Length: 216
Image (tube, rainbow, N blue to C red):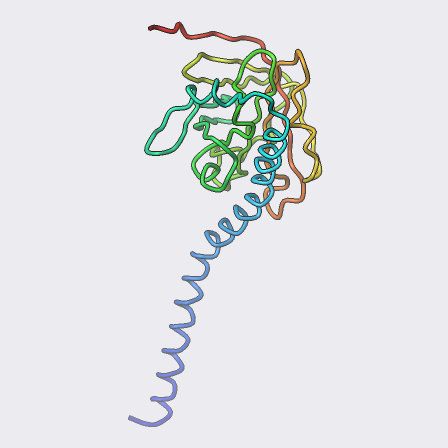
């Protein structure tokens, strides 16, 4: 076989391998990028749980967790409180204890773990801006005044109506506060979805509470 034919054959083989590797990279790159973005979101969202746990431990004269631990159910080793449903954005996700990486990968994290939904508290939830439509809080930015959010737990069903949404700096923890005589829901996610720099906050007020009958 002439030398120039062998040389052209090797060139073609190299080009084919390069095309194959390029194709693999194009397939893998979106998953790698999504993983990177989730890690960035984790860094922002887990900060809320850490800060709240520290402040709650410092100011708690009595241990409110004793009253709330019975509300949580262990499912495959994971503490689950219930579900959050938002019909407008096709959302239905489990409520998991804490806004840490493990919880946020599976569902929506309950930031202030000692608080339960209902009258007289600020029930705070945090979730990813997932790249999968309808998953986690990927479409939270679509919520507007008057939209309905439903929380279901073993204790009952709690209906909230959205009042407003706004952005805060990463170190602004004031949205975690629980003003007296205010029954509200706070939803937290990252903004923007890619390379987040702020947090998107949605505030909703409790309008209906249906308690489950407790049997002995």
